[in-house]
Length: 327
Image (spheres, rainbow, N blue to C red):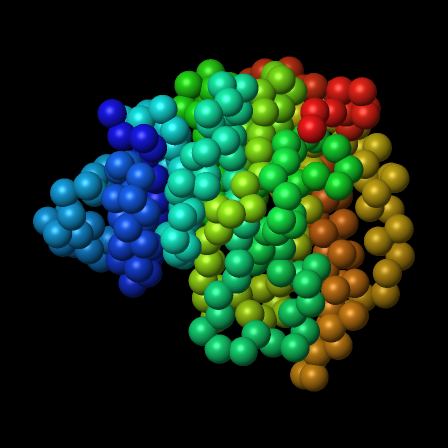
């Protein structure tokens, strides 16, 4: 049995796929693992690229998932895995040497259900001057420092991002897998799909770990380096956040977060970016857009409340008190 299955979910990214697959295969070889690419309803040359890659590499498997959506593709990866651990790698990400070994090490502890690592951004050229550190998270930058630790649902912690995350297959499937009510699906580019699964594992008492030595470089494509894309991304982040809160913590706690967390952002003065872009004002406008998206997401969530509840009752908990927080 392979030590892990590295899963790359892809949709219409034929031009980038070879780079990610080659990097994953190098790590898989070092750890006696396998690589599985899930073609999620691609309409470009993905099938041809994968056919060529499978002829070149015996350790590579591919499957076609016709149901569009990242959550559906990730769930297919869980079901198709031939190992106890699934490590997800974005089709835009390139693992650094030792990535997979560092990601797998914490699973020696049976209590661990999820492990994630750092994500560094890789640019084709010089990033724009307005791209401040707080805005880089929208591009999947993730770094919690040099110390490994357990992550909980609490202030100061942040569950791992999907570009560099792994799960114990039995625990992920036992928790219901990835919810198709959240996550990217065609033009609906919502996020928080991995956050949603992490939360369900967390409240069930399973451990989520941060592994700082498991590092990937995430390519930032050119179309994402515009103020318009950044504003839209933050708005969608707000919509996603409201969906997550309603689904997992209940409607009234979701409304409460609008009041205590987002309300101050509504008073921020609107900023329409023009060259030269003011970085501070753009950062504030992104915060305002996230608040607006959250408000929209609440309305949308109420309309879809029955569908969100199908996946189980919410967990109307406050952040875990210190007495419940593990090391």
